[in-house]
Image 1 (cartoon, rainbow, N blue to C red):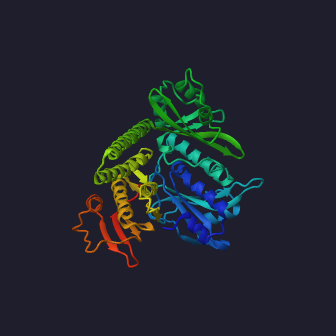
Image 2: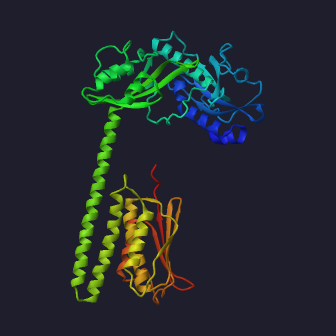
Image 3: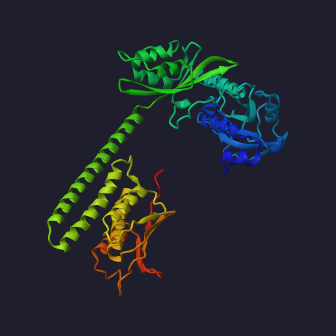
Length: 491
C-alpha cells in the first residue's frame, strides 16, 4: 500500500510544509476518531482540483467501523462527494444530510476542512476529513459518550481553524495515553467537569478519596504526589491544561501518565482534555529490564577483565620460556584470548546483546598488524561493513578473523592483506585475501594439521553453521572465503 508521502507527492500539489502538517495530524488523529466513535478518511485535492484522493484512514477503537476495507488510494471525482466539496469551498464543517444506507447500515457523514496554521496569515487549507459514524448501534448516549462527542466537536473545530495538531509540539509517544485509558474534561480554570471511570480509578490508586468533579486538578494532583518536595512545574502546566504536554506523577507506588490537550476554539481557550493512563506495571517492567541490562553489561565487563588477566599471565609466561616454539604458542594463545576480550568489552557498553562488529573487526585487524613480524610491515585493510551482529555470532567470528589474519601475516608474508565484507540479506560473506607466498604444495583443508585452521573451521562450520573455503589466487597469494547465515536484525 502506498504511504501518505507517496500519495501526496504523486497526486497532489501540496508542498513539504503541508506534508509535515498532515503527518502530525495523522500521527494523533486516533484521538479524534475515538472521541467521535467514527471512521476518519483524509481526502486531498488532486492536481488541478478535479477530484479527491484518500491519503489516510483511521478506525475508532470505541465503536463499530463503517469501512472494513481500506480506502487509502481511492479516487473520487469532483461532485461525487458533495459534503467534501462543500467543506472545501466554504471552509466550514458540514453536517447536512440524512444518514446514508448504501452500505446496508445507517451512516452519518460529516466533513471537516483541514487548515495549516501559517504565521501572520489566516492559514492554508490542505485537505478534508470525512467523518463517518456507524449508527446501527445508536442508543440514548451516556454522560461519558456525550462528553466524548462534545470534545470531538471541539477538536474538529480546532482542525478547521488550524489549531490542531499543535504547532511545534513534540511528537506523541506510541505509549501515550489513549481515550479509553482515562479522560478528564477541564474548564478554563482547570477544574474537572467530567471524569471517566478509568480516570477516576487511576486517581483512586494515587490515593484520592474525594470526588474529582469540581476539583482543581493541578492542586489535587500536587497534594497527592508532593509533600515536602518542590512541585514539578510540568505537572501544574499539564494538570491545568494550559499546554499540550505530557508528564508522569507517582504516589504510593502508583505511576500515572498525564497528557493535556488544550481546547482552543474561536481564538480562546475553553478548557482542556487530560488523558490518563496507569503505567505502574509498565514502568516496573522497564526498571526490571534496565536492571537486567546493567547486570549483563557488568558480567561482560568482568569477563573482559578476567580474560585480560589470563592474557597477561600467558604473556608473562611466554617471556620466561626459552623454547621458541613454546613462546610462539603462548603468544598465539594471548591473541586468541584478546580477540574474545574485545567482544566482551564491546558488549559491556552495549544496551543489548547486539554489537557493531565493524568496531570489533577494526580492533582485531589493528591488533594483528601490531603483532606481525617487523619484516612484514603490513597493515590489513577492511572494505565493506559487517553491521550489527548478535554476540553469539560476534565472538566466534572475531576469533576466526584473528586466526586468519595472523596465519596470513605469519606464513604468507604478504605486502597487501585485505578483508572484504558483503552483508547480503540473511547472509554474511567475508573474504580474507593476500598477495603473499600462497598455499604450500598439496594443501588440503580437510587434512591440514594447522591448529589455527582447525580452530577456524570448527568456529565457522561448527558454531556458525557456515561454509569455509581456501583457494590460491591466480595473481599470487591466498583467498579465504567465509559464508555465514545471519538471523533477522533487531527491531
